Image (cartoon, rainbow, N blue to C red; front, top):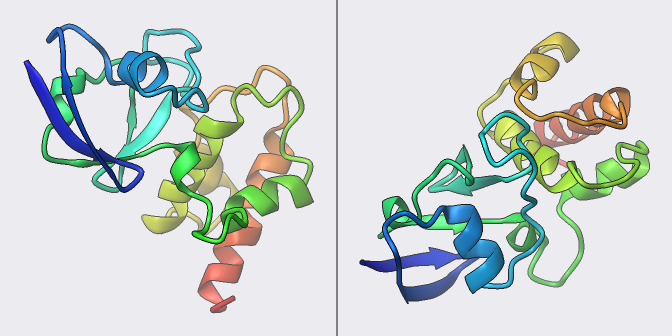
Length: 157
C-alpha cells in the first residue's frame, strides 16, 4: 500500500506493508527517532504524536491510516528559527525531565492538552496526561511546565 502524507510539514510518499505502525515508519523509515518506542501496546504514551492536530499513540496507529493527513512529531514542534516550542522551554525551566525517555510523548500530549483547553486545574492537567507514564516520577515538573505554558498562552505571551 502507499502512504502519502505530510510529516512535520514535509510531503512523504512510501510503499508500506499495511501492518506497519506509524511509530515504526517514523523511526525506521523516516529516521525520526524522537518519538520513542516504550511498551509498543499503547499504554505508556512515549510514542505520542499528533495527526491533524489530535494526539495519537503511534504504536497502535497503522501508518496507512494517516494517508492524506498531517503528522507532527517532537522534531516538528520547534519554531522555524530553531528555538524550542514554549512547552519544551517550560520543561527545561521546571526540571520536568530526568532520564528524558518519556519527554517527547509528554510534550506532545502537553501541547494537545493546552490546545484543547484542559488546563483549568492541575488535577485536570494530570488527568489529561494520565496516558503518559514517567518512570522517573517527574510529574510535578511536567504539570508545572504545562501550567506555565498554558498560563502564558492565555496571557498572550
